[in-house]
Length: 381
Image (cartoon, rainbow, N blue to C red; front, side, top):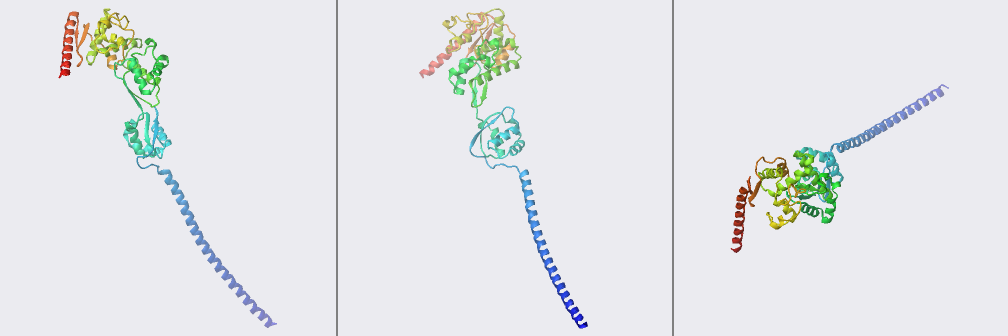
């Protein structure tokens, strides 16, 4: 029984040892797999961390790096800078038109260029996909402006101006005349009695490519009122001052003569003396030359200041600001007469009496005769 016991004991010991050995091997396997899995986990974590870091860095790069094109671009497009646009407004317009790669790129480029404050409203032809720096420079270059330019010199009459507007807008003269007839819509003051003559200020204007005749007329009229106000002309004298200024504009060439001739006009008006201005008669006849003929001076019309006293019914041309200023600030003198004795230089002589004036007229006639003879001699050479 003891042997059996001992045998059983021996057998039991051996079984325990085997179980211990198996458990040890299993633990070793688990440790090995744990190490493997840990290593794999670390690798996965490292890879995952790298992906996450790269994603964050990518987002950060996109949020701080400002998109911008390279070069001067290609493919033209029209861009409109509206009146009152801010730099951000312009940047948005350029981005929408594909001119710049981002609004911020243009804003930064504009801030870096002190001249960008000089960008003016208007239509521009720019290239698409421009570097923002070049887009700023392009907007500052007047050659890139897509606009119409109208230059009206001082002393032009209404018919001449209407034709110029027709040429500018590619309209017919009849279309421009129709627009000019709607004086109420244009804002013409009532004292003008529906007559635009003298109310379209002579200057150089720029307009958008699609401008209409009425827009041009309204702008020129608006500018006249601006100039009248700037020269402190009372509103109830606007028509009178424009009429006097238009005569000054047509009768003089030199700056110093404008207030002098204004003085002559007012001196004659003060004593109810006829103005006797050739310029008002020429407004009727539209004939060439400076001086009128006897037949022209015999025309029975209120604009004939040889026949009728006082000012003509309205302006005879569009006066410039210098003439308007002279009409408001005439030279204080006693002259009643003046005559231009040299139409090349504009030299003008003044007189208080008719006899003195006749002597001055003779000087002018002598100059005209000499001028004619000189031209004749040149023609025969």
